[in-house]
Every structure is written in structure tokens, then in C-alpha cells.
Length: 336
Image (cartoon, rainbow, N blue to C red):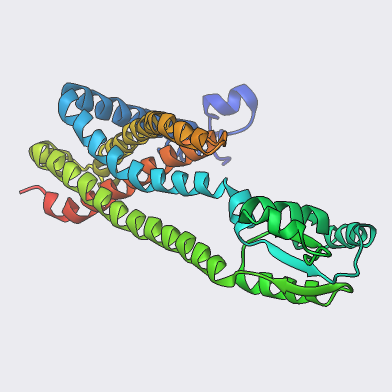
């Protein structure tokens, strides 16, 4: 007896092929959803941080002002040193090498030797002073004009004043020795003691600025760390609740990091304004003093790149200070 014919299911009757079992679907969100959530979380943290700073305008302003003063001190000293080094001509002239020529060297030979010296890479300027010009200048400066005119011949040699390209003791000594070996040069004179004093003063200024910068950076980290710690204590209950419902350490840390960066941003902008105003105010006295010496020297302002570096550095310090403060207290924020 034949087996009863089995009725196909509706899917088989419709298409003749049995449907495959459904593929398991993943419950994990896609990248677009995760990225949108990440952006939204950061946006909410920024808005929350800005709102909390605005609610305490006086306290936030004075915190930024303290940080700005600490930032502006080393930057201001560094800018003053840069402006002093703008008097490069004065530093180089103080380190001029005087080449006293032999008495038989005439003006044509002296000019030719001057052109040869100018071709050296370590030389910035070179000027020729003839025997006649040297005698006339000596007569004016010494006050012995009448007595010098009675001399049978000019006893002074021609001189070439060589201005080096940079003030460095070893390079200057090497340059002086090379110049002393040139034909027609009787003596090459350089005041190395004065050069050493100048170099020591500049190095002292650089080291002082560097040490002060390190000290004030540590002070800034302490200030921002203490400020963020106070914010953490004010929100301790809220943070414990967030961690109780599954909030991660990164989620808890994020608003405080933005708050530290905002403190740094405000401090950097205020420090930039303080430096610009302070240099402008000081420049009036500098211009008046320089005018008494017949100079048109004036202090330069704060360069844009230095100002931007100051602001970015302040933001970074605020971020680092906030991160250190939160990292220290994060373990204490576990829900009780």
C-alpha cells in the first residue's frame, strides 16, 4: 500500500522551495549610532561645563585671572628678553674685532682687505677707517688736536672694524685668529671679557625664565586641581548615583576635563590681553628713554604665534590639571 501523500506547507506550494531559517540578528548598534551617541555625550558635557561656570561668574573669573597672572609672568619675561636681543646690533658692536693695519697699508689695500673680510660667513659687517679719519677722530675725542697737528707724520694706522654675525666666545676667538693672519694686519684686538659678560647675562636670563616657568606651571596645576576638586565635592552625590546606574569612569571624568580646558582657555585669553596691554604701557617709557640716546627702539607686541601658543598651552595645562585631580579622587567616588 502506498504511503499517503504529504501536503506541502504553504511556502512550498507558493514557491516550491522551503524557506531557510531566519539569520540571527545582531543587537549591537552600528557605527553611526555609536558615533552619534559619542558626539552627543561630549556636547552635553561641554554645555554642562559652560553652564556651571556661568552660574559662578565671579569665582570662575578670579580663577582664570590667577592662572592668567601665573602664565603671563614667564611669557612676559621671555618677550622682554626677545626685545632686548632685538638690539642685536648693539650686542655685536660690543664684540667688534678691531684690526690695526700696518703703517704701509694704504686706503686701496685696506678697502680690498675689507671686501675680502666681508666674504667670510662669520662676519656681518666690516668698515674701513683710514689713517686720516683715525687721526681726526682721535683729535676730537682726546682734546689734543693742537698737539697732534705738530707731529711730523700721522702715527695712527688704518683700522678695519669687523662685526661678527653672532656673539659666541669660541667662534669669536677663532674668527679673531683668522683675521690676525691676514696680510697687512698688525694686530687683531677683541674684548673677550665683555663678550663673556654679555653671554652670561643672556644665559642667566634664559635660565631664570625657564626655572620660573617650571615653578609657575606647577602652581597652575595645583590651582586647577584644587578648583576641580571643589567641583567634584559639590557633585559627589550626583556622581555616586551615576556610577550606581552603570556610568563609566570616562563618563564621570569627561565634564571635569572640559571644565579644566575651559578654565585654561579663559586664562590664556586673559594672559594674552594682560601681556599686550602691559607691553604697550611699558613701551611708552622705553621709547622715551631710547629717544634720549638718539635711538628709535621700541618694544614689540605679542606675536600672534606666541599668543596662540600661550592659549593652547593654557588649555593643555587646564586639561592635565583636571585629569590629575579627577584621577586622584575617582576611586573615592564609588557609590556607598
